[in-house]
Picture 1 (cartoon, rainbow, N blue to C red):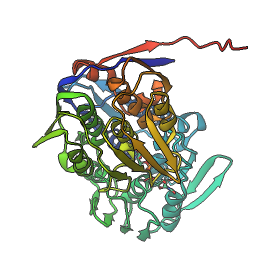
Picture 2 (cartoon, helix red, strand yellow):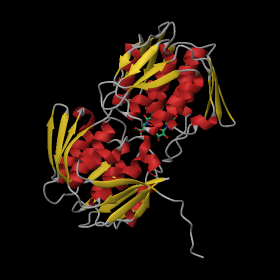
Picture 3 (cartoon, helix red, strand yellow):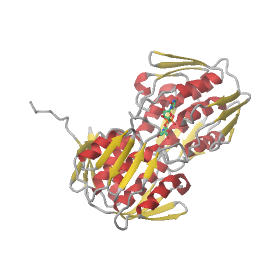
Picture 4 (cartoon, rainbow, N blue to C red):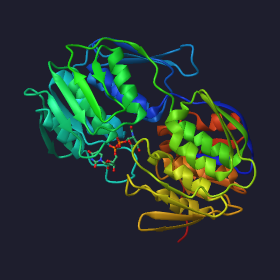
Amino acid sequence: MESFFVVGGRSLRGEVEIDPAKNSLLPILAGCILVKGEVCLENVPKYSDVMAMIKILEHLGGKVKFERGKFSNDNLIIDTRDIVYCDVPNELASCVRSSIFTLGPILGRKKIAKVAYPGGCDIGLRPVDIHISLLKQLGCKVIDKNGYIYGDASKRREGDVMLSFPSVGATENAMMFAVLGHGQVRIFNPAREPEIVDLQNFLNSCGAKISGAGSNLIVIDGVKRLHGCRYRAISDRIEAGTFMIAGAMTGEKVVIKNVIPEHNQALLSKLSKTACKIDVRDDTIIVERGGRLQSFGEVETAVYPGFPTDLQAPMCSLASICEGYSLVIESLFESRYKHIGELLKMNCDIRCKNGVCIIKGRDKIYGAEVSSPDLRGGVCLVLAGLVAEGYTTINNIELIDRGYFRLEDKLTSLGGDIKRIKCEKKVDNCS
Ligand code: UD1
């Protein structure tokens, strides 16, 4: 078990480089299942979710290795010519939500699949009915039994499919299933997140014929096979957003490099209300706290290009030190408020009623021992710890490692005081 130990009150200053997006890499890794060749993914951070997907690829028969390249992270070489298996067992699937992304590509390549229910962060029910509905619309027989999803695509068909809600993962699963085929598949009401466009670009680099990602209609013309390619995923808009919020909360001058500002428009518009200073230049965003932060008003999460649910928790930390009241509303995941209880331990003033959080900013919040409830809830506690008076210990940080790689090194290089510590299992002695 590891924890972060944060000494609050240090201003952040300097440059930080944003890594390739976890939420692009995970579906791209699943997409490799379709490829009969070698893929080189450049600059891949060892997010623990990525490492879990690598284990799944290896289990299926893929050969995967890291190789030193010219980027700060190693390149990942994936050879999926010899994919022989078509099952993802529970012990692998339960480690990561994106294990469900393998269902479409395994069915696309092997025509049958047996994939256990996915794990991932506990932020709500997270059903997979839309994934299954799309595969059924494309002629697959799908049976959901004893924690496994069994698929048979021997009678697959092409044509039009429609999502009842623009789920990111379900859109990606359907795209990957449709790539290898004879006719045309049109996906109506797909998710429009930048990572969907990135998956399209990756698959097209391997010889797929997909267009329309990022719009309301994705069109896929089936191809016979996919070949290998060299590809670099887009930069992580959630990591960029996290550092933008960190800059606003603590920054003397935080220079965030390798950003696609267009992907963070919703956050930029909220941050501009807080009176922090923001300078956007090509692929760089500079954020400086300036004086006393003002409330950003209201933020409600929504599908892209709306405000990302993955930045909802960090916004709660920001609101906790802004003057005035802020409202935070989570509209996508019903249980994504577990960080609130931890923020309360740090003297934050937050009330939650009917799914709405009312946050009153305080002049001071205080360090405490807290626990990451999930990936983004964990990072929100790190942000709070950086501005809190005193020390904050954040337990359960393996959840943060799912989607931030060497977070503590990046914050330390900016002047933050944060250490990763091993912690002994605690014995509760209060008899
Ligand atoms: C992806 C992201 C995650 C982000 C989320 C929303 C990855 C690896 N993860 O997750 O970081 O928070 O998008 O932007 O890309 N739903 C159903 N049935 C389904 C599928 C989804 O009801 O079959 C619901 C979910 O419970 C949730 C909403 O749809 O309420 C959005 O989920 P979805 O877009 O599928 O998110 P993920 O792909 O799991």
